[in-house]
Length: 347
Image (cartoon, rainbow, N blue to C red):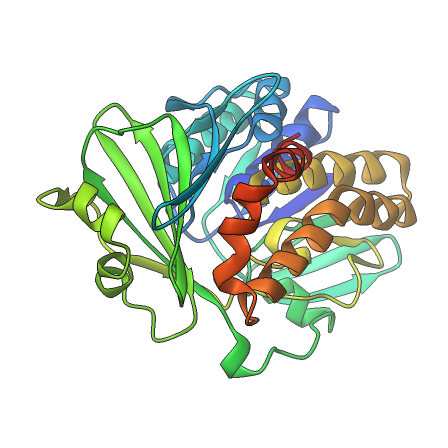
């Protein structure tokens, strides 16, 4: 198979956003993704206002429930910030994926159900060997194939893994329960955080982040207020996990291959703006390809991820330190500072 101007490896939300951006620029694109149907992932499922605006710009408007802001909760301590300009939206990951896939199909992006097993670059072409033994080539490749990116490994761009004792993971499950607030609530315990996201009028998603072994039921039991809210609510999805969350890359481009989304590097899900950052990277990657300037993408990647990397890294460090019990009380004492951080991350 030959012919496209761009191959996108990975058909999750960021990969599909790359394909949509490419088609909007008039580029022929093929998406290589072995999974078919809506793809699920353990995540908080809260789209920040900036992420929702990015989706609207490319013609995607997934169904969900309006999110008014963020709340941090630690026992009786609670601080809230409501988004200043526009709301976000709680959206099931499968719903988000289906909406992006429909838009990509509408614009004529081709999708191939297979996986990449090898990669070679020859001058102005990139050749990918696929799991069915065939090959496909194009002038450009964007790898958006997730935390454990095959393409990042094939390019030799992986950095040393974090020591086991410092790795963080996530698990998520949905409950049949009418949301009690229009905020994403982040409940803090001594060992884990639980993100509660309204995703419909009859359902909330609960994502727990922490070190292994990560027991969702145990983590919820350690949060009496949340446990009381969920008492008697029936789980309506299987428990799904992800991690380790920290992934680092040596660079975001090698030759004519660019990394986007989690494949390009990820700090932690603690501040919840992964989709906003990923959609910005998709736009920047396609713009760099259009202009034939991969150095531009490296600069854009650093710019779009700067706040995410700095603020999330700082919060993760605090969460691992003796200061952890003071995080929410400190936010309660400085609500304006808490609000400014939320606003900065949500744009």
